[in-house]
Length: 149
Image 1 (cartoon, rainbow, N blue to C red):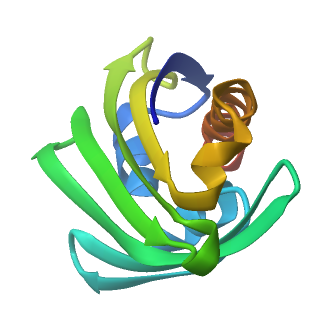
Image 2: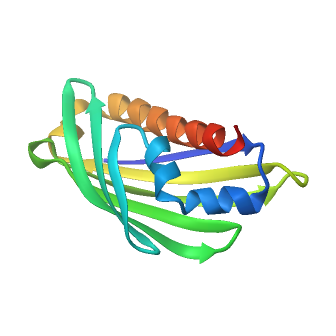
Image 3: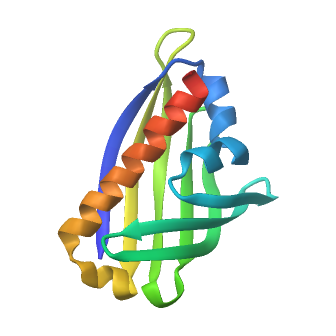
């Protein structure tokens, strides 16, 4: 089951600061809902553990996060894939673009894609879609607060 979500976040910080935060595992860890750990294994690769509850299923996903198509300080693609044991798998990514909105503000736009399989996929598309949109929205709004706050 595949999903697409789009949105934008207005962040009260200059583009360079937002870009640096998008590449900072500590800030990303605090912004990713349910993130237990996020560690850099290279400048563009991270190992992650995330606990998610989707409907009645709570699962711990272990996986990799990769940064691609880097165009500092204006755009990149973040991709991740995690396995949740018996619950199934989740993979997805987001194309993120940063646009200056005056000297101390940035508009972050994202187009995210997610795909789930296994037991989670059996929960029904509406529940998965609403949960995915909620998680994407939470990540970007929390990220915006951490960076612009």
